[in-house]
Image: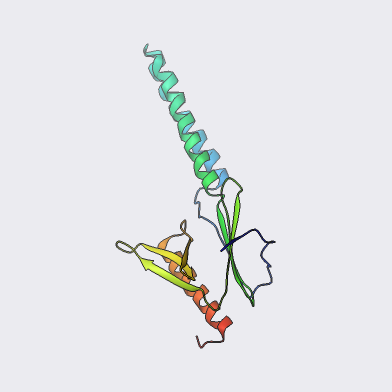
Length: 164
C-alpha cells in the first residue's frame, strides 16, 4: 500500500490537507515569552537582592525550559496529511515533522472509511482496504475527525455513483 509516486494531483474531485491546530500565533508566543521572562527576571532580582542569588539562575532556567517546550510543540505541528480522491485512486500523503514523506494509494471502489469509537467520545479514523488499515487524522479533534469522515464517505459515494 505504501508508494513513492509523484505528488497528488490538486485537481482531484476531493482534496483535503489536514494539519494540527495551534491556537498560539507566533506573535502571541513572543508576547508570552517576553512577559514570562520579565516576571521571572523580576522574581530573580528580588531573590538576588535578599541574598538568595542562586535562585536567579533557576528563574532563567525555567524560561529556557518553557521556550524549549514550545519549540518542540511547534515542531510537532509541522505534520500534515493530504487526502486526494481522483477518478481511479484515493491517495494519502503524510509529511512528518522531520520532513519524511510517506504515501499510500487505495482503490476508491474498495476502500472503506471507518470511524472507530474508543472510550467515551474519543474516536479513531481508519481507512480499510484488502485487510490493511491506515489511521489518519490522529492530531485532529474528535469532532473534526467525524466531520472529515463524513465528507470523505460522501466523496467516495459520489465517486462510486452511489446515492448520498
